[in-house]
Length: 247
Image (cartoon, rainbow, N blue to C red; front, side, top):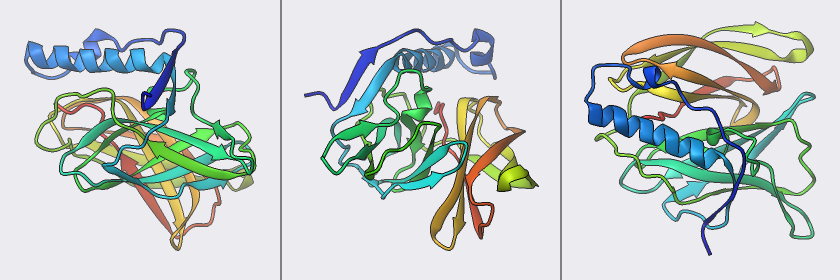
C-alpha cells in the first residue's frame, strides 16, 4: 500500500518563467527550479492522505488553537536523519472516539505547502502551521509526516532565511497583526515561501498564523504581515521560514 494516497483534481496556476530566471545562474539550474515548481503544481492537483510515517521524522503532539474566525493546528517536527529533508507530505486530522479518522488538510483545494513541509535541516527541528475555517470535530488531533515523493537536488546546507518581528498592530476582538522582515541570506531565490508565527505563553502555544510570499530574491530582504489566531496575551513569539528552493 502506498504511503501517500493521491486523487486527481483540477489544475493550478504556474509561476511566471521570468520569476524562475531570477539571478545569474546556469540554464541547468533554472531548468531544475522550473521542474521542481511544476512537480509541486502537479502534486497540488491531487488530494493527499499520509498513511505511513517517515521513520526519519519525529512528530510532536499537535497544538490546536481555536478562534472565532478560524482554527490553527501547530505541529513541531524533528528531522532525526543526517541529511536535509524536503517536500515532506503531512496529514493532520482528528481521530474520533469510535476510531474514525477525519482528515483536515486532505483536499486538493489547498495549496501545496498546506499539505507539505517545505524543508527541515539535518538533526533540526521546525514548526508547521495549518489554518482552517472548518470546524474541528471532537476527538484526538493527530499529525503524520510521510516519505517525500519529490527529491530536488540540494546544496550542502539549506538556504539561510531569517524572519524577525518589526511591529505589532492590535486589532479588534483581541486579534493582532504582525509586521515581519524576511531576509534571504543566500544566492538562491525563494518561491512560494511559507512564513509561520507561533505565540507562546510559557511553553504552551496560544496563537499562530501563516502567510506565503510569492518570491524573495537572492540576498534580498522584504516585509510582510500575518494575522495571529488565538490569544492576544503571550510571552514569546517564534517565527519560521522554511526554504522552498535549494540549489
